[in-house]
Image 1 (cartoon, rainbow, N blue to C red):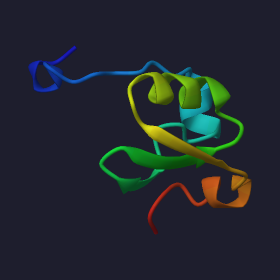
Image 2 (image 1 turned 120 degrees about the vertical axis):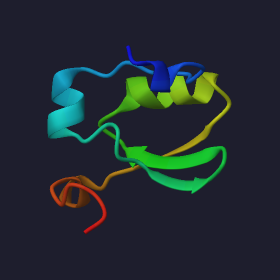
Image 3 (image 1 turned 180 degrees about the horizontal axis):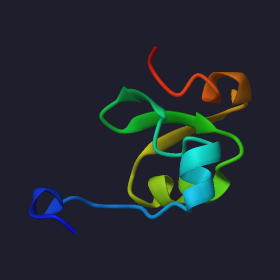
Length: 69
């Protein structure tokens, strides 16, 4: 891991979660609140354990847009 990530609190996701569900592309609503796809419950649990308020939302059509176009 590069030095630029030192001190970051990381959560691992699978290659499939990252590629197919864009698990690393949630909609951040505030410093401790995020919307993520309902198909990512493990990620939601991990974020919740870190004090982030997680809003699960069924937005599979948005996922195919690959982020903020």
